[in-house]
Amino acid sequence: MDHSDAIEAEVELEAEALDRESRGNGDARRRKTARAAKGDIEIPSSDDGEQEAGESSPLLARDEEDYEPEQWHGMDDFANVAWYRRPNILWVLAPFFLMACAFGGAITPKINLILELVCQRYISDQQALNPGFTMAPVDFNGGTNGQCRIPEVQEAVAKFTLLGGLLLGVVSAVTSPKLGALSDRYGRKPILVVTSVGTICGEIITILAATYPESFPVNLLLVGYAIDGLTGSFIVAMAIANAYATDCTPPAHRNVAFGYFHGALFSGIAIGPVVAGYIVKKTGQIVIVFYILLAVHLFFVLFISLLVPESLSKKRQLENRERHDQDTARYGVANDWSSSLRSLNILTPLKVLWPTGPGTSAALRWNLFTLAAVDTIIFGVAMGSISIIIIYTNYMFGWESFESGRFMTIVNSSRVICLLLILPALTRYVRGPPGAAKTQKNRGCDSFDLFVIRISVFFDTLGYVGYTLSRTGPMMILSGATAAIGGIGSPTLQSSMTKHVPADQTGQLLGASGLLHALARVVAPTVFSAIYAGTVKTFPQTVFVCLAATFGVAFGVSWFLRTGVYFDEEKAAQAADEPAASVHTNEGSGRIPIVSSVMAMFGAIAAWVGISGGS
Image (cartoon, rainbow, N blue to C red; front, side, top):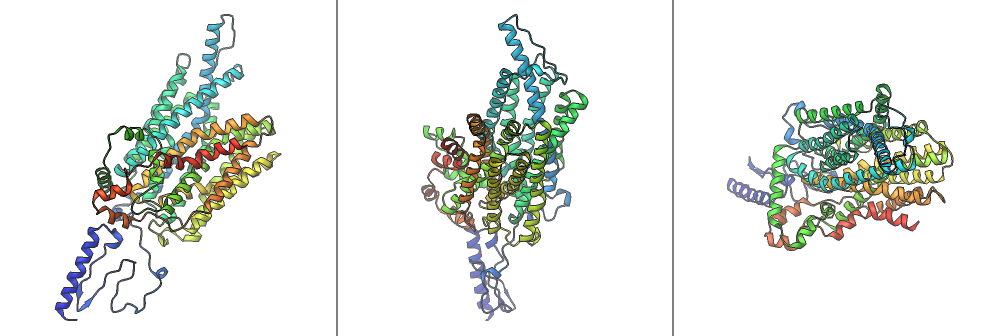
């Protein structure tokens, strides 16, 4: 080959490379263009991922499975920075564990405080209605307050806590997806701080209530619930922590990273109440606990703000903002009344679970919908069945605080062992260490993901079948430990969902998951309590039959999940260069219909309601 031919070949190949870049084919396609060197012309890789050809290249192409896969480049922007400025899940995991302990430690003291305040109001109301009414005053200094253990006060406390939970859940369901989407454009740290600011405001109100209980109006505690929900509460903090882990963890090992955060959550729920109870017992003042919880949240805010490195580089934040602005300009914002009504639909953010347009497919939508539904079921059952199990074991086996505490310790310890030891060891055995992972780019679920999801749902089903059949305390504990194995499913489900969408939609996706969790936090306890209350006189195990059947349905549906399904960024990039009108025609308004929103909630709500109604 002479020199002129080499120059011509170089020009042609450079033009092809520039053309591919202008079509937005992605970083993987933007390799070095061919150069003429010593008369030997290097051929760039083709669109199907073939290796570059040269004098040492084999004459016959190897099978695709022999190629070195594309590497994950999520941390490339931090390659040249010092270790203390490089994001890592350990930066967030330790303070998150403290937050989980505070979350768990606040549950019992706050309920006891509400009980005392409601009891005091009940006494005042009765004295106003009946001047001859006499009842011992409430002792706010660690007294037993046995006079408050009457059905009227218990009913009022249940209604108050239900109202507070509804207020927090509904408000956080509205704000969670928006905060998650904002984290994609402005970073994870600001949103983590925002979630704690709302909790801090709620703790300040609680401290005022515990300091001045005789004059504090109990309804003001509802303002604390609302502020906490407005900033997303602990659910959004969990979602953003997972988004942080997504940014700095290869896809193949995200289930382990998410498992660490779930392990920290359940460890905190197990340890927090014990520490809080010990503090109250030693000091005799419940307000001390709330001061300590406030200090933990303040420490979390300062630590995240001052020390933790941001996991989204400025470059990626700007790219995500530009992409968001382009999407907004392309699809526009309609001002008609129908669009205004759609904007009021709190389920609209779930459109990320039902993507349409270039780069998507029916299989992608089915995978995302199914993964989100199963994840919401597992979360709702885990958070909503605790109180029912405690009430049930007290009724069936006569368990008091000690026996119930021992049961919760064994179950949560089993769950933590599975999350922190078994899941990481199993993942390392199958996929190797993180640096050696071969599936580095988002390529959807793989066979190992599906195996973990199915086996976890199976053990959940087995555990709740055990609850139904248990007639002794030890069998109940064994069933709880069996169901705890299913805890490895939730981090795997969420990590699998992140492997179906582009990196710039991770926060939006996990925010939508936070919306589902917030709604499940409202729906699950209500449905479980209604089932148990309606069947306790005839067949008290009905609620466990319903839950086992729900898990059985989820187990069957999981077999329809497909591997290798993901959002095709290359097709979406090519479509982005087409005229906006044609893209708008393909995607309509770019908003998910209400029908699709309802479909995304089916697994979390309709399954429970349908099964309970059928029973």
